[in-house]
Length: 438
Image (cartoon, rainbow, N blue to C red; front, side):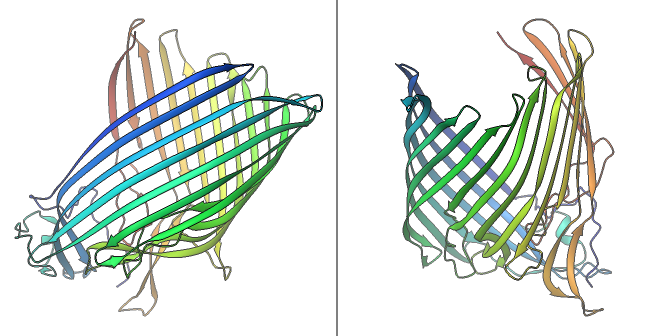
């Protein structure tokens, strides 16, 4: 009827047989060489392989408020194999010109991935789950042979870039650069061919002016280009995100860096950003739609040592996001967020700390109408705050112990409304860790 559910945090739709096993292997290497005269060269390479194997039990539908009826089963088995290579190399150093010293960076990066997905769908998809049987783990494991689907992608990204910081005047620096990116994808997604071959040149520029020895003001502009892997309802990969970003602000440092502060105004326009739009019962996959939106806002932060042994930090962000018609967009992003932290060095060996994070209300249009009121249905998470405390003790020069308590007030909240279903965050919880160093 459009009212929110109120399950306990421990409620789960997982069946007793469901699982999701993931194994990741990574190898990397870095090399750095001093070329002399302030110039350095650096190169890195990384290889990773991720293997996933799962038996999943997804539940969909809208429950009746009184009986719990209205939920349905969607069992499936899923296997994925992803292999990725990335590499980057660059040189950087000073250049003398017009009686001044400037900085230059030249480099490039390359990446390639091979992704394979295979889905087996279970017998009994769409079986009604009466009452609250969706949550008791008793749904029997079916044969995963109703039908199958696969996706296989090859993705390559190559980028060359150049950046320079020009010393125009003693207090004025110009930062400018460009990166040229080529992306290519080929393959298919559950029967739908997917491919693109795109090249973009993306410039950026910024000015930094030293107002005083402690305060610098800046302005910057950059273009945005980011390919995506999400697919729409027809299993076609969404076009890349494109847009631009403008930012102006100021940064300051006082008392030999013991006190730091920053303030920024920003505006970003991003076209075709993937947003969850529903669940495709044919492929068993979430599908997405591209959203054009403009975000603008303010960000401020201050941190430092107020008295010996006491470190404080505070940060605030306000962001307003609108679509092309001027309506609120991406409403699952909080408009206001606040972050506070404090650390106190009680003794040479004991450090105590606390953190507080707060965010404003978020909501999501469920694209559905209430059967009782005829009004549109929205999911909502009101504003909430999370409080944490920490104690760290150095036992000796090698050993230490750290204890954390999180969500001290046991706040019950939904972590995100990015999808049409939301999940509760952890209640009061804690960790204790022991560390050793040479």
